[in-house]
Image (cartoon, rainbow, N blue to C red; front, top):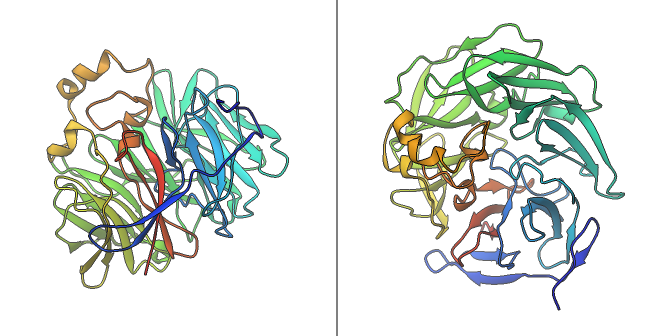
Amino acid sequence: MPHSFGKGTRHPSEHSIWRDRITGARVHQLTNHPSISHPTYFLQSSFTPDGRTLIFTSYRSGSSQLFEVAFPDGEIRQLTDGPAIHPFSPAIHPDGERIFFVRGGEVWVIGRRTLAEQRIAAFGGAQLGECSLGAGGEWLTAAVKQGSQCGIVVGRADGSGWRLIPFPRTVIHPQFHPLDPEWVEFAGDPAPRMHRVRRDGTGLECLYEHGNDEFLVHETFLGQTGDLAFTVWPKALCRMDWTTRQIRTITEFNCWHITPNRAGDTVLCDTNHPDEGLFLVAVSSGRRKRICLSESSNQGSQWKLSRYALAEDFAAARSTAKSGALSWMEVPTDSVYGPQWTHPHPAFSPDETRITFASDRSGHTQVHVVELA
């Protein structure tokens, strides 16, 4: 009998386990439904702070909704229903109880215990990107596109103090500085990529001037060092000093999506063209260790190039893109940068002993966790 879906419904474990055929690492597959299921975005952990539960997005009920599963082989519980959520938007509060997410131009929060939802902020006629929490969970930010206006929105998790900080181009992936939540770093699309602005909207500046042919992607903070790490696709993994803006190369390697550990001495990454799997890279030496294969399809024609997409690159995708798309993450059928659910997007568990990633090796994207030896 088919399962019924809805807020609070519970479903049997879909867990399986195997050894990676190259490294021998233990890999858990937590979902096995004939639909798309993937972890939250790679810039934050999909595990609750206690490491016992994994939060993921699934389309199994007919639209993108929030689910959780007790690790490793517990039952699956549906958390949201109704209008679809932004599939990559969920962010778990440090208390482990609250999860923030986006629906259209609104930021919502749900309590895991009660499943009660509350709208935190709303921007009429807008589309918001993924949520990002500041240290301590007091502040939230997200990219926004409201008509012709792009930028970021920033406000408190309690719903107060929300503002829109404008920017003249598409914005993606805003993140609070881990040591000073007054600052937000964000990506402008296309070049130049890296910018920062204070939470009150002052101090806007470009961190590095570069052209369209220098393909900087997936910048994030290098753990608690406060510096930035980023990829110059597909050539190198680099580090930028937050204060001096000095850039140095960590390693010449086709790192793709990157996630530093808290100490900032190791960077987790996936790879593409060729996909050689998931790796840990030592920041001090550039030495790398393969963790496992992803065997995902890693779609997106732009990743075969070493420059940002131009208007002509998007021409074929426009016929299938929904109106007002914020970025390639909002265009599920886009062949330029995605679809995003075909990318592994690896991220650490809170205790950094496990790694979540997505893979469509079975034909549908599923949630995977690999154990670190």
